[in-house]
Amino acid sequence: MIEDKNQQSTPLSDLGEFGLIDHLTKNFKIKHTSTIRGIGDDAAVLEFKNKKIVVTNDLLVEGVHFDLSYMPLKHLGYKAVIVNLSDVYAMNASATQITVSIAVSNRFPLEALEDLYAGIETAANIYNIDVVGGDTTSSTTGLLISVTAIGEVETGAEVYRSGAKPNDLLVVSGDLGGAYMGLQVLEREKEVYKVNPNSQPDLEPYSYIIERQLKPEARKDVVKLLSDLKLKPTSMIDISDGLSSEIIHICKQSKVGCDLYEEKIPLDPQVISTCEEFNIDSTTVALNGGEDYELLFTISQDDYPKIKANPNFSIIGHIKEESEGMHLVTRAETRIPIKAQGWKNFNA
Ligand code: ADP
Ligand code: MG
Image (tube, rainbow, N blue to C red; front, side):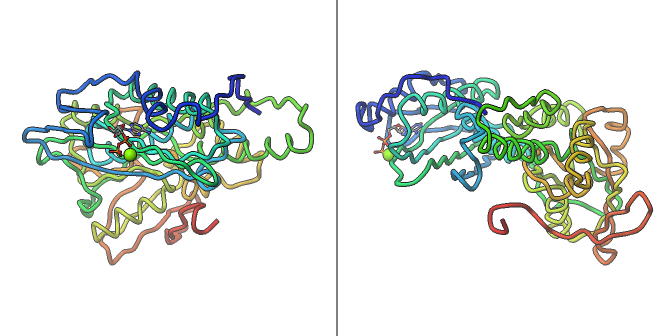
């Protein structure tokens, strides 16, 4: 398991609330002209001229969304930012600012929060985001982290879940199921570790899927690519809860049906081999696993030439009339209705 390398342990009470906030946020530099005032006043002040603004928030709770026995705090900070940016990009917007709120119990020393903020800072730098505020409070149980992301989009360029039309193509970026299988491997190693703390797991064969779970990326590049291709999707959503759940969101909100082809679902070889090892069906994992943070979108058939040769995208199906329903067309060509499953949290 990943040990905290930081040996020091300074109690948070040594700093006090304001000292802590200053300490954690002192490195953040403003990058965007839309940020008029960042951290340090009662509220941040932003100015977006004539752009549309998108706002989104995600709350991550220890024991529900993350397990610190295998999630290093630096990765957690990074991931907490990424999951929010992914929602901004899913609107075809560019992310510009975040606020970060944390609730921490006294079992966390200052060094732990430094690690968390190092991850936040890394994500903010890589994705070119200003951290413009937040809140800091204590918790009697575990760690909570809530991130709000703000983004901007040219009026008319925003993409909703509701715009898919019959005959549109259903497209997904990247590959699916990796984050879920990475979690399966980490959970297994955690159990092994409990029995034998001296065991040294060889995680090398799982490096890609573990990274998908512990250090996901958001598809900022896809938004840029779509813009370069002058391609506006008719609908878009990010894949946080699994492909079937997201397809259902698009179909319900667009009042359409769809055919999704099992053989077209993009899977990394490591996902396939790990599914074999765990005796899990890889299609089920792609459909119902979560946290891949890829973008799922629909495009008009006329736009097909713009994406057909692009290795970032897979065409996995097409949109139909609502009355035709939503189906998975299997390799054996049977048609199975797509059902929502989502994952963990409430139905765990
Ligand atoms: P207030 O009393 O108005 O809530 P705070 O003392 O909580 O103000 O916060 C002071 C400043 O630091 C504000 O700009 C706030 O947005 C920012 N801030 C507080 N906590 C955090 C945090 N965890 N991460 C980033 N910024 C924070
Ligand atoms: Mg406050």
